[in-house]
Image (cartoon, rainbow, N blue to C red; front, side, top):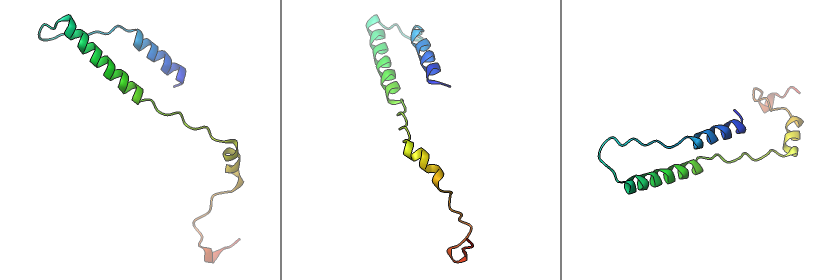
Amino acid sequence: MTGSDDAQREAEREERPLRIDVRRGNPTPEELAALIAVVSESYAQEAAEAVAPEPEPESAWRRSARALRTPLRRGFGWGRFTG
């Protein structure tokens, strides 16, 4: 999944109209507006906090230095060094 796919899906979600079904009671338009404002703000805050930080790019030195040495072999002790 790429960043452009995520952006496209997010744009599609924003285009869909909000649907609220009132199952009990008879709220006034002001009460519905207050509910929508609170839920929208809570969702926006949660979405803003859920963004993962961008990984720091690896330096060219670190990339090139990886191949300079091989990993140490832990199977041999220091007393039995065989060269």
